[in-house]
Amino acid sequence: QMDPKAAKELVKGPAGSIVRLKTQRASAPAQEFTMERSSAASSSETGSAMGAATGMVSKEPSVPEKGKEGAEKAAALHEQLSSLMKQLDDARSDMRNKVAMQSEMEQHAKQSKQTEAKSAALAKELEASNAKLAETKSKA
Image 1 (tube, helix red, strand yellow):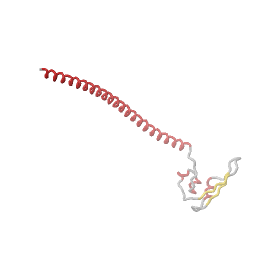
Image 2 (tube, helix red, strand yellow; image 1 turned 135 degrees about the horizontal axis):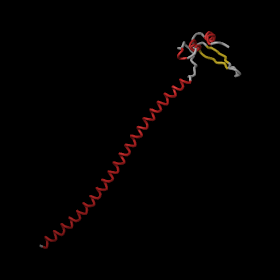
Image 3 (cartoon, helix red, strand yellow; image 1 turned 180 degrees about the vertical axis):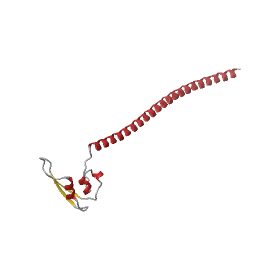
Image 4 (spheres, helix red, strand yellow; image 1 turned 90 degrees about the horizontal axis):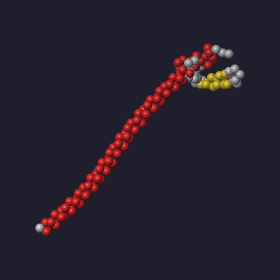
């Protein structure tokens, strides 16, 4: 077993050079990792003494970090959903207005046809009346 300080000393070296680590946990088979050293990273980036010393960042997010990330994604999705729902409500309102306007236009078109029919009937009646008048004048 090796403590993090000892591991830190073993993996120090110039940026770009290769580090090979062999690890084994309990009864699991050993695993070998090959990494390239990079310039030193801050400990807040790596979250471990070894990572801070070597600049190798290989930290998995912690449960609170994952929770925070999930909450942020959920909040963003909620905002998108709210925006889409508002757009849907606006579209429904526009559709209702268009349907009402179309209904009103159809009603006006019907009234216009009725007026045209009345006008045509009155024109025929006027024509018949004028014909009778002309006939009466010619007899007189």
